[in-house]
Length: 307
Image (cartoon, rainbow, N blue to C red; front, side):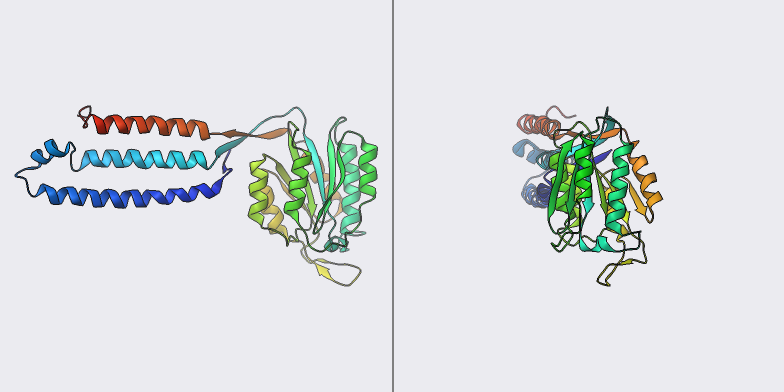
């Protein structure tokens, strides 16, 4: 189970809590100054209608809790958990950037990824819905979601290295998620060497969690790197892909040969759960409203209900 925030920027409103505490302390000091004009504290209690210490703190604690609940509500606090899914739909997101021409996996990374993707089509159950996207600096929808494996094979066969520079994993995740939007259970199989250089890693994770999409990452390449036709050396960037998988409830696999592909894809197919997301905002706001009513009653009854 994970706690996620669909509007995390609103968490900055929690900074209101130290401000509230500061003004509360100032208020207490003001009351104490006025108290010295009286013979005893019982007199000021009758005049001001409050007790100077413990009951003021009670209101402070309740106000802090109420603010926290409201901020969590407007921040879109949600929890995710795995539930049983009858069938998973996939998007194969295949890196087609220039680094995928490296030849540390025979005959090169992209051709090995294409071969493994073909085998993936053979391994999945019949009627499994699959889409194909490729990406470099831009994302290309090669085949929309379909059960027709002939269309999928054709799309995979036509994949080639893209001339657009860069590796935009976020764009690939957004396109893949849009293709899976109406599916009961959705997973992205991201095949890449991890050489991401467009957008930030946190953007990828936040978007995936917000849309309840699990990303399995296949890191294709070796730590020593491979050489492409131009003589450039490209190493596998495992940290990026491992972080994406771990933070979206997916799995990471290091692919250094064709056999590694078969193991990882078979393992992914056997995952029969989906991520469900539950929005807690309404419950948090209702709880905050109840606290507001309690605070109102306490203040307007001058704490007579407290012992």
